Amino acid sequence: MNFIEKIGKMLGKYFALLVIIAAAIGLFKPKLFLWVVPKVSLLLGIIMFGMGMTLKKEDFKEVFTRPKDVFIGVAAHYILMPSIAYILCILFKLPKELAVGAILVGCCPSGTASNVMCYLAKGDLALSVSIGAVSTLLAPLFMPLLILLLAGKWVSIPVVSLFIEIAKIVILPIVLGVIVNTMFGQKVEKATKALPLVSTIAIVLIVGGVVGANSKRLLSTAAMAIGVVVLHNLCGFLFGYLAGRVLGMEEPKRRAVSLEVGMQNSALGVSLAMSFFSPAAAIPAAIFSVWHNISGPSLATFWSNKQIEEKNQHYSSTIS
Image 1: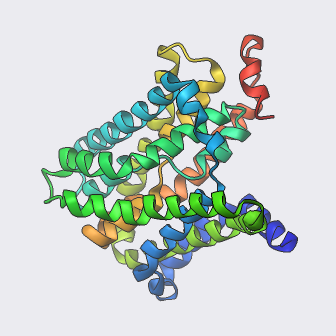
Image 2: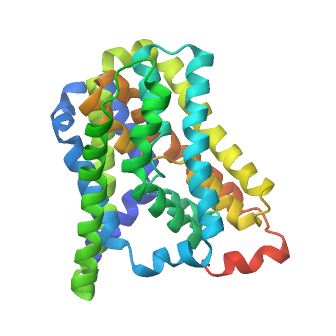
């Protein structure tokens, strides 16, 4: 298991590069990844099960000990990212399928890598974990309603079916993972060390499959789609940080909120786009998967080298 753990850490270190390579192969040699497309939901379910396996009761204590901070983070996430996506769609006059895909990404819960980025950025890790967990658990309720509100002008939104699908591929695997972790504890501790490797491979395959399925369309729409995705992500980081600042949060909390707002579970966006809309609607989510694994580590590295004011040090000391 030590060998698998080492491989997982090594792949995690070069995760962004692996995602870029998979996207490039999918773009120019799409047949190599097309077999992945029907299995996207299954791969996402595996990722979510792994997330559930790592969750403990302690991860939710912040919800009750600091409900205001968690509420700010979750509210900022579900208000800012969908709104920014909608505004960008209007400003750039995106084609229908890309607009739906961009809004779909904006309505997704926090990304699974945001906690790692928060740790590297010397942010409030406990808060980051709580925001990510709560935003994920609320996804079946908030996502269909937000998508209906913002994307309903472009396409018909199957709200009930979306609710069921999100619950099936997100909530059910997480709950099963938590149950397994709770019941078997130390017996599965060794298995959890392989989860980073499994998650990395699954996300890389998902990105390659979606890019492969859209290779021809991507070549003609790449510049516009990439521009919107990059702006969406960067605005999420910026406005998430500013929301924390305006509401009086200390620096480590601001960093946590910024990363939780800006990083999306784009793999979920890919799965839902493929299941309910069209392969083209999955393009923004696929690009987001590549980009936020470049921007997130970059921002985390910047913050890791930036001194936090002395009065805020005790918030980050718990994660160092």
